[in-house]
Amino acid sequence: MRAVYVLDVSAPSTPSVAEQRALLEAARGGEDAFRRLVEPHHAALHAHCYRMLGSLHDAEDALQEAMLRAWRALPRFEARSSVRTWLYRIATNTCLDAIARRPKRVLPIDYGPPGPDEPEQRLTETIWIEPYPDEQIGLEDGYASPEARYEQREAVELAFVAALQHLSPRQRAVLILREVLGFSAREVAATLETTVVSVNSALQRARKTVDERLPEQSQQATLRAIGDEQLNEVVQRFMDALENGEVEPILSMLADDATFAMPPFARWWHGREAVADSWLAPSGPAGELRCIATRANGQPAVATYARSQEAGSYLLIALDVLTLEGAQIAGVMAFRTTDAFDAFGLPEAIPAGAATPAVD
Image 1 (cartoon, rainbow, N blue to C red):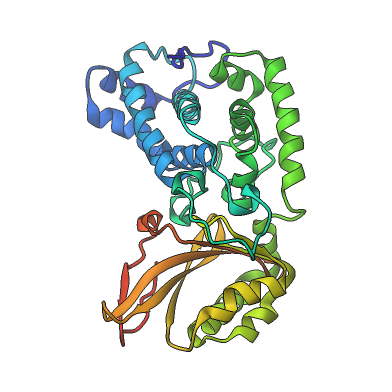
Image 2: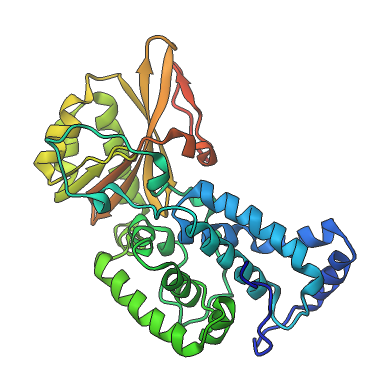
């Protein structure tokens, strides 16, 4: 296995006094001290693993493995770098090991061309990018350097996470460590056991690939431009139209080149009319759907529930993550992988006749 715990003697930051105290206690076998040491970084490390892997479940597995590696490596930690640098080094290499064992994850729009006339094909869920709950986005205020190009919420948007998956694993790691988390080229070189020249070269290639795949404006910039009031109005109109079985209101909200997809189904649609014909037309009469507003990947999202006569309630069937272009909907990624929704705090069912619950 790669030697991932050797520390960079030239790393500029060292553990704080509190960290040094916790390190001493943890090195003596203190699990509580170790927990205090890593807890401040846990959420941000989880988001880091998600960016690397494109999967909430894979991120959880990778972070658990990384924490186990860190615990085992603690006696060899010589405090020549900060605890943060050390933990990201371990987590990054754990993710690289995971990537080597499985295929990359994509969205349907990256899997193949739109195919409304092709038979519906449900593929294994392990090839699709999964949604990420906003509540779990780990923000590291005060850590990332001013040179970091991407905001940390921007760096979990669907378009960005999807673009990352088209990079080689090492390019992916370099871009995230340098331009999301703000590590220096020297720190990244130590993490990946390579040279600063190699890191800078990988970063240049990664930037080119990602920039070619990203829209001109991020969702964070779009949401700031339209404001919370207008955003809430767009989401409410979308939910009302779904619940009322109304096609025209949703059609009027779609951009001309809107896209719609339903992972784990490979098929997707492009263009307002194609989306309306294939998705909206068979949506059913009023009362068949119930909706709950939530957020995923730093974007507005709607949990959709369908009436089940057998269960006597509405059952969760999809999480629609919306991509906006101004106040219009440019994309709907309707994730149908309901086992990925536990982390969103969504109820599995809404009793018929009950008020729609709110999600905090």
